[in-house]
Image (cartoon, rainbow, N blue to C red; front, side):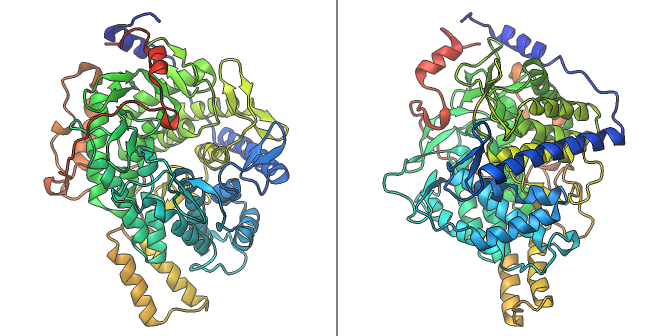
Length: 589
């Protein structure tokens, strides 16, 4: 590989970011037409799953069959429940909810991923339960028990996952057997994203059940990770949960770390916990200082901050959407335009793209129908109203339609030659299709922007969750469903409120794209000042330090340092030989 200087690297990245064509506008009728195209694509794919794969976990669209890779728990249906509701398909939603209540069991001798089971199954159950419990949506034709139904399944699953978090360090195991718990042979290395992406689902479960054990365990996991950050406020990608040492010391915003950032921000928005805000603030500005290069982001060593991966990876695509959510519009738009230029250039986002050689990265050639780019496009349109994002969404939709096959939509194993593979993961239905549907939907008949926060699997949770949870118990009594006694009601409400503050109970909630409020926010901008020209950013980023920066007494100060460990291949990360293939003979400057 040709050696690339730091200056040339930056120029190449800027050139790659310059190719997006803006849209002059889109009529109401055109948006409705595109929304219906998304609905048709979703319906074709969902019906294919139900006809050819159900009750297996996922659909194999080329062989028209099902496969159980995720615990044999009918994962695609659990992950897709709330999408049926958001599209207004009340009859199919109710049918699916009732089937799950009657047929789903998690008492299985199956070892599952904590991360995937939490975000897909537990998150899907909780979100669908809250939607079914909302009488204003009229999704259920008969009475739905707000203290039972899917919530009982969610609680059972939460109880089966919880032992994975009960470690001496607080950092959870990556896998657990649903019946027997954590195996003595379970790996001691876990990804940062896996350990740091529990707060929303586990927190919501605590709010709905009145039992704080789930929320406290998830918060302990996040804080335990953060306490092991480097002196540059950077987290590695993989950590040994026994000794707390990083086994993969590359820091980035994509694979292995991505949703940690997202959940620290959203957990603060949903629960009002200042500790989450403090962790997000410092982690976010560390990323801007050390990982941002032009419009793009790379990976760097947590201790030295030297570039280790000059790669775009597709999981980075959530980042601009998160920036829109927090009010960093200029930074978010700049990066999203760069990301979309790569989509237009290649037709899809490969899992990895080398920003030094401007080539698809070997071994990372596929497109598994990921949702993150559509997610950021959705948030960009809601935050800015820019018509260009409707055009960008249409680009994504047209590309997805090319992957339609008789039994669903098939992922790509190679973006360059368009080779399809026999898999359609549940997140295509629960996330990719959902964000495109909501992008083009001009009516928002079910979904009301500003009332919900999306989990990393795009499951909507109401921002007034603590008050919604209390209302569910009130509704149960009003419906005559084993009404709580006054003493029981007081115990439930006390338990809920002891868990901490939540969103404003006023009916007119602020738009979720607005900057979250933080009382006593620090007004300075030192937190993101940098002498590194390649990591510089526009002054618009000051909007965060003016609205989200916590006062000094809220900032975390416990900073145990860890010695970087040799690289390992966990979670699809590179071996030393692969690293040499990325860089050639020497790192870029």
